[in-house]
Length: 242
Image 1 (cartoon, rainbow, N blue to C red):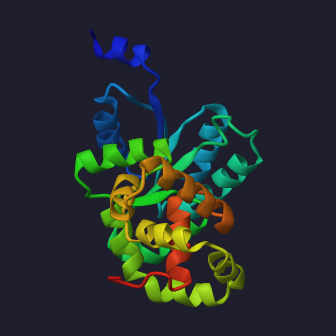
Image 2: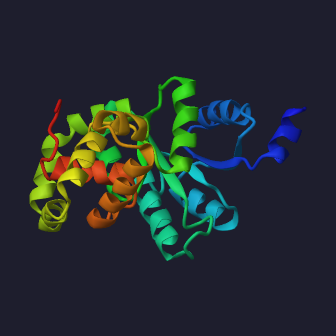
């Protein structure tokens, strides 16, 4: 079966690439389009171009650079997530996910994008398989996104998160409403554990873990797991290296 036939046989994950460097976009595009279940449907050189393109074409996952001329990735992510929140539940636009592409010297920028609604971040020099896995993982929506990268970066900006957490008493109140078992799951989530790992550690089924995760996200008002992990750092539920 040809690659084109494989793509039509299964529904591909539609990917948008937003980066001001043409060579970066070309490299990512070649890698992503080499996979039978992934398709690059949009390319843009800055945030404004991305908003315009994604207004006309539907995508499932956006790979978003942080620093770009015109409109940066933080503002573009915020506006895309506002669109998603206003879209009909279950629609493609409502399910849009953003993964921020970053380097460690842009910690605060990446964090700001996460707080604007991005579902995770990935280092630009990550191995190809990690990039591809991150796209699929974000699209599934129920697993940890690039856990090693997420944990390292959150550890690095933990003092900033704690300062912000002190300004958000509603997050502390939400965490206090978690049951004892939900708090256990919450801590393991924040430590970068996947659902199967949490299930094995607590001697429960994976389905039970998924139920707990759903309750935790609802109580915290978190859009996804990464948003919940940020709240864990803000409120001191987990600390760097903890």
